[in-house]
Length: 519
Image (cartoon, one colour):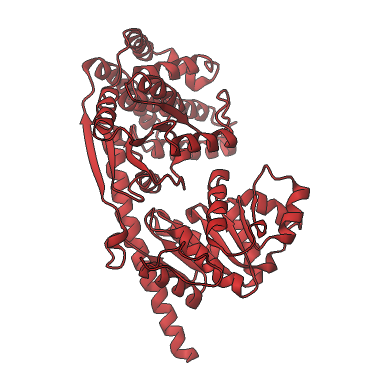
């Protein structure tokens, strides 16, 4: 094996890979660059090699990551790779006191940090961006709206340093990709794929499987009641003059768009048109009923029953009272309660158990991540999985959320360590584990439900097959939102790649045209 050589890279720590050298050269020659690359192809290594070049020139490096665990991970990686005193590689997060941060910046040559801290410290003049020769934005697709990346990049542009933006998935809409590029001042786009000739040999095999189940008749009955309720409200809205087609009654995005439109009308004409308030309540009731429908289709009776109990505590809301005063909703809730008492599970639960038992039978040392979008379901899955022989499951969720205390960042870090050391072998996780979680030894990833976002789909998939072959199993309930979400993510991923290729060609054409005049 050949290793990359540089005075500031520790010997025999970075394997030479042609595609990584190609990308480093591109950034050094072309400036601010967005690199779109599948997970596990070493985006952090590229950042570390670039950091060595920048440090050699006497400038400092700022590595930004959206979460504390990811910032800690980068801090650890830079310390292991860079040949500079370890005290000059510092970690800055929300738990670092402000008075200490100022002192750390003074001695630091490499800073690994969460963006909210850096934004605050720029405003408080604790950090001097003119000292930074390279600013790395990991998970760069976040650089939209009011996210801290946008502010930091705007301030950093004043100092003419180099920007490196890293992501596996910047989004499928050209407008969003352009917004990311504009906000970060990107001049150059580089895309690498598992199919590239200089990449193929480094990509472990990833087996993608779809496991379809059917709703039992008991679930179908509840589903029918919820759909009837939604259809009736939808017809009432249509008859009131709102443009809502029958196929849009079950489209959450369309309903939210209509809700926003009606809210605007209320702000302008509410006093003269009190019927607008009734329309707003009906739209809100449809949104809530659609959520209930999604739960019975994709999660099961217990998830639906928990949601209905929550609604009872909110019954003073007009939209909730519309639901709870309807006989169909009352019956659906009663049927869900009966199924919970009978301990009837969603068929995906049995499918999940079989997949995990099969994996552990093949390799008892396997580590597995099960993704589920809902915290309530994560808790139930953790409990059920721990009843299986050989399974040591633990939940992995985000921080406090209303009545759920969640997990602190310290608890998250401890759980990851337990997973890496095989103290636990099944991580039952919400979306918090999708982004940037580096667990090389994960053998199996299960999506308990597909996600409509191509970004989240790619990130979930990327949690396995990092250093060795891996398997992804997506559980899909036939003829439900599961199927719609799965195909939506697939379509968006194809669109994303097509948009990126067009944008890359466009930027190259502009550079070549400019070169003719400059030359």
